[in-house]
Length: 384
Image (cartoon, rainbow, N blue to C red; front, side, top):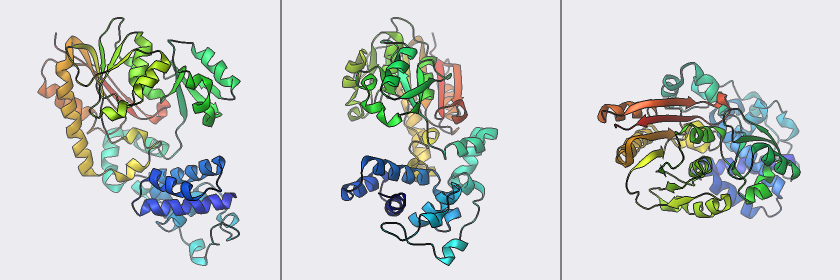
C-alpha cells in the first residue's frame, strides 16, 4: 500500500468508529477485507487510527469536519504534512481536497484543544491543578513501550543484552528499577526469546512502580484482589520470591495467568474465593482508565458522567469487601490507572471516614510527566 492508500483506509475505519463500531472491531473488519495489506501496512493504518482517536476533537476542528476524512486532514495539518501531497485521487488515495476543504479548519479551543470531553474539563482541572494541561497534552501522544525485567531470573543489564541481540534497543528507566523503555525494535518484543521465556513482560513503568512501592516482606501472605491479566501479581511474585494469590470477579480475565506464571517461574495461585487474612491486599480496581488513555484512547470518548459515578460506587464496594481480608496491621493497597479525584482521593476519604482506625501510610499520584501512565496508589494500614 502507498502512504496515501493507508490514509484512505484509516478514513474508512474512522467513519465506522464514528458510527458506533468499537475501534478494534472496525480495524479487524477492514483487515479481513484487505488481504493485500502487509504487516507494515496494517501497523501503519492502525497507527493513523489511534493517532486520531487520541485527538478526536482537535483533528476534527483543524480538518473542518467530524468525519474520518476531516479528522485525517486535521491530523496531517497538526503534523505539518501537506495534505495535497496525499489527497491526490490517484490509485487508492483519497480524492483531492475541494476549495471548501482547503478553506475549512480552525484552531481548537478550550477542552477541544486538550482533546477532552466538555463535561470532564472541570473535573480534570480540579483533579490535576497545574498539571492538568500538560497531562492532557501528554495523552495525545503515543505511549512508550516498557518492559518489566523478571529479576527473579536475571538482571536488568542481562535482559538488555539479550534483547539487543535480537535487535531490540532499550534503556533503564528511573521510575522503577525493574523497568526498561524500548527505544528500538518494539514490534519484535512479542517474538523475542526473552519475552517467550518469561524473562521480560510488557508492563507500564508506573504500574511497575506500584508493585515496588508495596510493603512486601519475605513470607508475606499476598493477595491481588482485582488481578485481571495478572501483571502486578507476577511483579509482586518476582519481587517477593514467594506465592501470590490472584482473584478477580471475572475469572475469565485470568485465563492466561497460569501459563504466564509458569513461563516466568512465579508462584501464582488463582483463587475463586480468598480465605483468611493477608499481610498485603492489592485492589487495582476497575476505573475510567483516564491515566492510560494514550494506550486506549477510545475510553476517553465513551466515558460519561453517569459511568464515572457507577465506577466510584464499584470502587468503594471493592474496598469494603477487601478490608476484612487484611490482617491486623496489614496493608490494603488501592490503585487505579486514573488521574481523576472522584476515583482516587475521594474514595480514600470516604473509606477512612466509614472505617475508623485505618491509616493512610503512603499515597502517590503518578503522572505522564513521570514517564509512564497516570496511576494512583494509596496504602492503608489496618487497625492492630
